[in-house]
Amino acid sequence: MKYQCCDYLLHEIVFDIFEVKPCCEASMNKESIKLIEKFNGIEFNIEEYLNKRQELLNSFKQGKIPSACKNCPLIEDKEWDEKEIYINRIIVANTPKCSCNCIYCVYTYNNPSNKEYFNKLKPYDIKPILLSLRNQNLIKNNFMLIVGGGECTEFSKGELEWLIYFTSIMKGKIQLLSSGIKYSESISKILKAGEAELIISPDSGTKKTYEKVKKVKAYNNVWNNIAKYIKAVNPMKSSVKIKYIIIPQINDSITEVKSFIKKCKQVHCNDIHIDIEHFWFKDNKDKPIPRRIKELVKLFKKEKAIKISYSAETEYWFKNEEELK
Image (cartoon, rainbow, N blue to C red; front, side, top):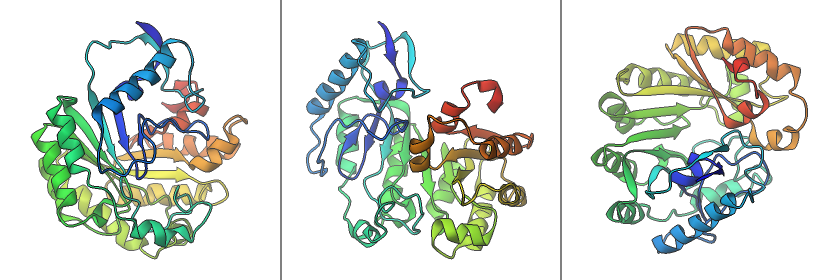
């Protein structure tokens, strides 16, 4: 059947700290889509999840696109194959505990004092949920497991290792989001042996800006750990991607980005991801692209030896894909 939808809504599931969502890419607007609210992880009802998912798809078939999805560049108008219900992307974000205190953190953005509360919040156990999805044959082989959070190196003992093992036996690929502050032998091992991608987001090229953005003193340590992870990579299977979130008035200077690119070259990084701070973006997305952001994107594009990728927010503004190539 032909209608407007996207592959994420059809085949992704997000386990957040208090809810289950169909997608974490729907960030064009201030609303978000929730399939199960007030979720505590004690009992994941697969039938409820599938029913809620179908209700969402039915609204798309009727041309009723949720406000959270409007203008999202991932929405496509095409024939969608619904013969098989399956999940090919799982995002685990059941814990907000983190080793830094980023100024753009979704948990502390409006109230920095929330940091202690969220760091002490006990996450629900994701293991039985993933096993139940597998036992119901809902997880497709070669799926992607994205470990967000929170900070994956702060998980309880054995938790990260179990997720890596689960992905391996399902012949999937794992994507790990980390601050890079705490070095993990488990991450190095999967980079050497398995289908893995590690994303670290220093968002700066200088110590001063790093500490302003992250509110921790770990600049040199993070870049040293990035270098160690990159050395561990099996280039045929794995990768380390360094992320730069553009934060207007904070790290959006030409000098800062040049310093960032220089640091990437020093650690032999060949993969950079460009993003825009989400709260600022939501307030400014309907305005013309600021000249400074255009200049920064052009600066990144000049680095022909480095692979550059972009967030959905960046692609939203640069609607002409040629501008991003």
